Length: 112
Length: 117
Image (cartoon, rainbow over all chains, first blue to last red):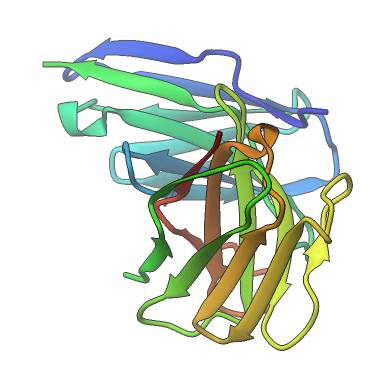
């Protein structure tokens, strides 16, 4: 049962424009959400996170929005750069738990 | 930043043999390490949580006698796929956690591609 879903397997965006990556979850017990970025032949690297007590967290060009009622979060990258081209994974965690539940990933391609 | 390595990066083995994959935290001590598996076009799925000096905790549906996990030191965890079969072919990735329980930071290794022929 896929508790974290990323319904768009791929996304292409022009350099300088905004990239919006979406993620949905089904388990209301999740209270912490993370985005990871993964380049080929490398492990995922942590990008940004958000606690369920917030609805927005910003770090430079990256902003994560959380809509708890819709069980939906999104990652905004603006402006998008070619170096942002990678696979982005959304992940979620329950309170006090160690394990993360991952989405299937969205491959972002930023076109120069 | 924290670095996690895995060895080997890829391995091909014959059906019925066993394969060991190592996960090392290079510049920090990790009391907890995690083993994930990813099939093509699917998400990373947690297989087990490995705590240094104690038995691993396996997720539902993961055979502990088939996937042996040993976390003998604070910088090394190993996953042994015993009597491997073609359906075990997958991408295995480990992560190591900094901090205490509830810390969200997991640092991932680059993964190991296992192909069983």
